Figure 1 (cartoon, rainbow, N blue to C red):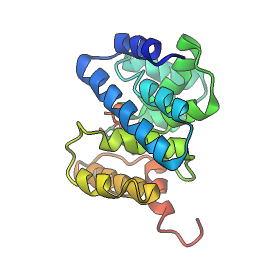
Figure 2 (tube, protein in one colour):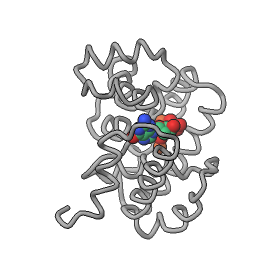
Figure 3 (cartoon, rainbow, N blue to C red):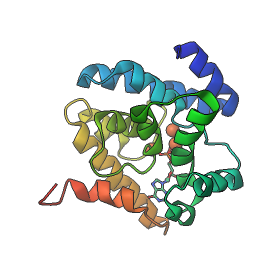
Length: 187
Ligand code: DGI
Ligand code: FE
Ligand code: FE
Ligand code: FE
């Protein structure tokens, strides 16, 4: 799909700030894709649609988890986790984006997971480091992301785990597995 058309579709789904974030994620993802030799068009599309479901009604998203047979534990770790997995299905049904690589990157953009594809990593880290983000430690990740995207994803996962623990929030297993992956002897 043409970039302008895709942006117009998500703009209707998002608040102004979230739309501007989306444009910055897109620009960041394109640069990373060019640098790492990933499919630049897929990076663009996945970034544009990554937060498609962000402002959908929580009850509606919970119904999608049930009707699409997504992992039912998604319902137990907090509503923030729903918009990635549910969004990956919504963009197929509502927009006609049927591409396993793009949908995977949307699905896992919040938690990450073990064994991410290059496109998964690009969207996960672009969402974390886009220039509007002020998270403590984000500068350290920006400084190394063009040298070692795996290290960058690991640092983002570590920060996320620490943040969730500080706030006594449950950590989703995929988030933990991304953190663990790099530290385990057998990867
Ligand atoms: O949608 P964005 O705000 O652009 O960013 P995102 O999709 O990465 O969502 C970030 C939020 O997700 C942040 O509030 C922390 C939360 N989150 C990430 N991993 C986990 C998590 N929340 C829980 N409960 N468990 C997780 O493992
Ligand atoms: Fe998100
Ligand atoms: Fe994120
Ligand atoms: Fe985002």
